Image (tube, rainbow over all chains, first blue to last red; front, side, top):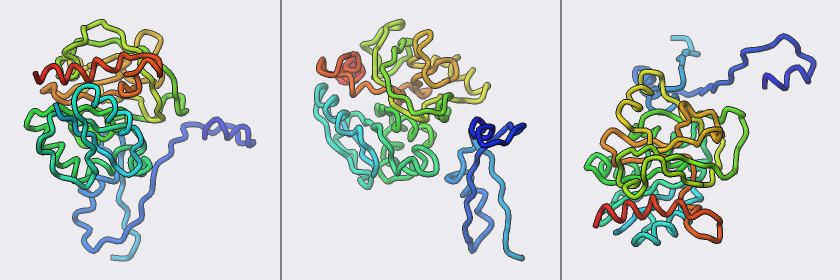
Length: 56
Length: 220
């Protein structure tokens, strides 16, 4: 990605990191952390953040 | 000696694994939904692209019923060999330490590599001496071995590095040139290169045979 950007005319862009966004609907928000740690992310090599999109 | 070779949707190297195991005993295919490992003396988790490497390589396969059975088998001391995607599955399952990242050069690589055995204690290396060199094919996009510094020290201190890429041969940026590791108990081995593709003169090197024959020998 980072190497492709100058070729497209974008200079001065660095530190490119690509992650993953997972959207889901959960009836019980309590176990979401566990879900992230067990499946969605590998805690050894990935961080994760949980953001609630609907209004509480 | 009965080998159980797992197959997940997307696995492809179970075929050569079955062939290689067949040269060192009898081989049985175990579909990922099977939980029954009775009669199996050693398990192979093969290479390929289980679940298309979706989410992360090995991340979904590790939750299969067969892997639950393999975890029990390993906890009881049963020999488990993970090759390439199998290595990734075992790391995701926590049966081996560390993780495999995208190759340093971000490219899928497919070439012969030279490994140096490190003398780690495992049923799969009893016939391989420390310092012995093995020529095996490597083909992977996510083969860069990683562990946080503290864990890396533990692995080294515990003599858990089974194979390193020979000097100048590290094709993917693996930490400390690590190509394969064993668990603390030594009964589980994972490596990125493919011993099952190196058991017949027709395909070049036969250095992979020693890994299968060692396990067969250590059960006699």
